[in-house]
Image: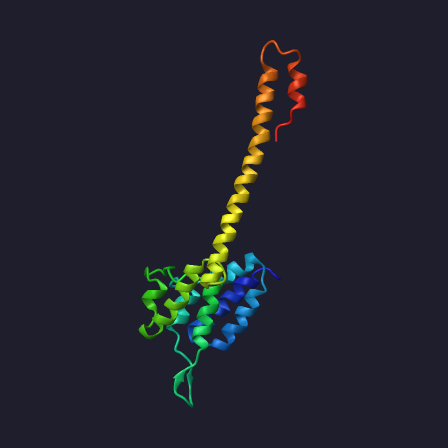
Length: 185
């Protein structure tokens, strides 16, 4: 995109979070999702003059009320979940050293806690115990593979070093030829 796309979208998102324009927040988050990593980071790193992040502002926004049932709509919750999924951290502090938890209205704390705990437990996308188990197994397999690669790479290099050292010893017939035939990896 153009220079500053992320910054511009981030500022618009900040205003929408502050006033609780949940429909616009969802549209802006869709647009931000389309950005490359650098612009997306720029959009999500925007704060207001007091250092409040998007999460600080949205948790304080008034919830949309269903006029007929007189109950809060899920709009705010959905927007907060989207921001958490984009890896905004509720532990970030503003200039007054307040985390998102510090400014979150009591009635919304449980909603924030449920989703951020799920994000923290999973660490990766997924969140279920099955997904966590699969992640753990794939990490173990990856660790085993990395050890094997490291051992393999270390093996030829050690062999090459010892061959070069032997070739360089006094009394070897042609140290330069032996040294050049062994390539360091």
